[in-house]
Image (cartoon, rainbow over all chains, first blue to last red; front, side, top):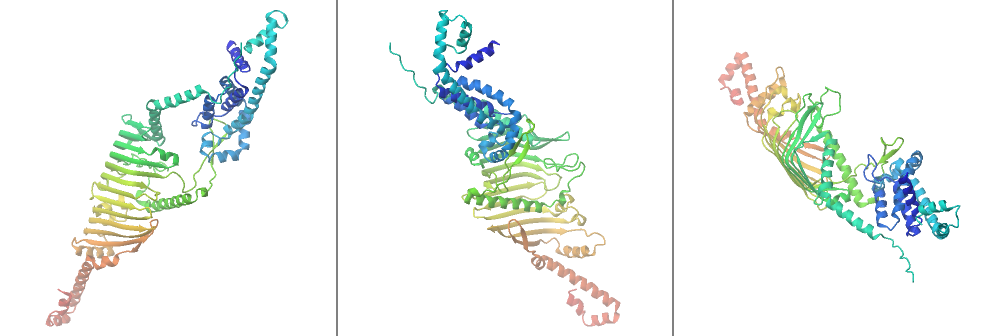
Length: 176
Length: 430
């Protein structure tokens, strides 16, 4: 329970970190993609595209916590999307066949209808989540943080007794 | 107090770059402990995938950056229906790979050197042959003497021609590669999903080239125990390949000694312009060995031929047009004509007249490399040679015998003949 709370706290801390929104965007984008794309699936060799994204996450100045958290979220989402991935991959059968003739794409399992389906879902979901997180980060910092800090000060001097516990919990999550 | 503005984050993470450098360095340092042992395991797995086992006593050495693979005391065995059979041993085997060639899609070996090589393809207990066991019903053995090896050789040549043509076409026009649909396979780990494996169009695929080939061995046990059992061999060559580059002169030299025949020497030269020459020299082959049913089936065995045969082949080709000569010289030829075979008896009488003198049979060959044909059977030369003298002697003897029989039956003619000083006999030389 405490571990789950710590993870959630880490997630909320993303909004209040020193990182710029574009760093959060990049971390989430790469994290979700790595979560959806194969890295070294059973029965196949290493998938170069997935590993290149991991290396990019290390070298580019993205938000690492966002990358790791969203990699886990992406992996869970990809497991949930398996029933959708196969029909989607089969619908892009032509792309799978074309990829079999391109060594890089073939090694990255684009010629596998299941992994191709998950990769395509990842490419759709990742920018959406990344944009949402970047927007949420910007909104929190511009519109919410100062208000929360002001409320926290009021709670500290005992002026808003009714919401004190809630404010303290929210501030703890956001590390304010 | 003035506040310092926060530093804007840069696009790259310095710590990440350092980490990346450390990762590369770690990977480089881990090569002897992790990558090279993994490569050895991969080699063993590859051999095992062929249904073969490598002895645990074999010492492997892989140098990734030098592109070298070395095996000492190599012993490869095959287990079939519970019967384990050593198929190959070698004292040392060393492969020096041109690492850069892998990225170009070719397999280029700077050298392939093996010493103390021996092979054993002796039939298993059930009559099948190791390594090349055909997938057929149990108990039904291949009749090796009836296999059309020439047909196989022609098919291989046709494949090579197609491969060569495609390679030249690809060199001229890299975009002209024909499209072959990939093969769809089911993924056993993911129900409902399938994956596509690329298929190389006919004639395409990696080119294999060996700059320096040197293999020497102690012998090869063939499926049946015949005088052709190889007791030693040396195979040397340079720029050995099927598809030749414009600056590659291929040479291949083989020297083979066998249990019951003289040495065999083969010299092959291929120039890049589709010109080449082949010289083969096989000495002291017992004709009895050729007549062994394991070698030639039932075609020669009933005649129990004896004698010694030498074979030389000299051939050259230019733009695939083949010109050559194959000379078989048989000394001390004799055979046993089967009872009642009149034709064989007549031939035997002529052969007896040879009295062991060498019989040379030159055959001229032409056509193309892919479909060689005999342009001159050499029968004229054979008849003009020592066999003509033998046949002449035999015909003369027969005529004399017949004349004597006629004279014996006709006393008047006999008397007249004696009076005339036996001119008929004089004429016939008796």
